[in-house]
Amino acid sequence: MTKQNKAFKFRLYPNNEQEKQFAKTFGCVRFVYNKMLAERKETYEKFKDNKEILKKQKFPTPAKYKKEFSFLKEVDSLALANAQINLQKAYKNFFEGRAEFPKFKIEDLNMQGMSQALHFGKSVHDNGWGMFTTFLEYKLKEQGKQLIKIDKWFPSTKKCSCCGKEQDMPLSERVYKCSCGLVLDRDHNSAINIKNEGLRLLTLA
Ligand SMILES: [Zn+2]
Image (cartoon, rainbow, N blue to C red; front, side, top):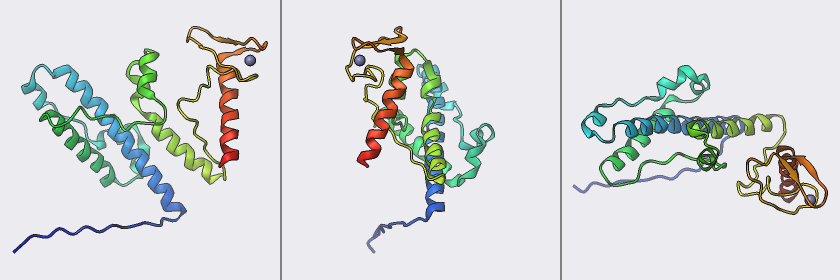
């Protein structure tokens, strides 16, 4: 007898409530995936020169994080368990030489680049970000508001919020000074640019 595999495709039409739950679940899955990956990476770096010891290391499960991050209890634990299975597969592929080291599910902001550039170390790309935007988005939706995401390459820091001219702004430069006469705290200048860009995108939508 020949074995046959059948596949079915479904299109889901969730209501508002379900949509929120999905967004939350995806956010939590990504959160847990990144957390587990960060720990694996650390363990790997520590023991990579001794494969025997490395093999014996125990890796964390989603349950570990539920104590610390109680919002994880609000989503289906099978979804979180799947994050673990996927990571395990990716890690195994790497370990057996079939793939690169698993990557973080990474994010609108170039978190890794940012943390490297600012010498923040692990703490910044430690991931809370994706979770944060997911939650923020649906909290805003509840209030009839909208989250607008600005392109990560938008030059909010370099741009003059008054005349639009651009200039390099090394991190040490705390005040934005433009030939048009603008003198403003760099973050304040950048915040105005972000606000204007957000309004511009909103009118396009
Ligand atoms: Zn200017």
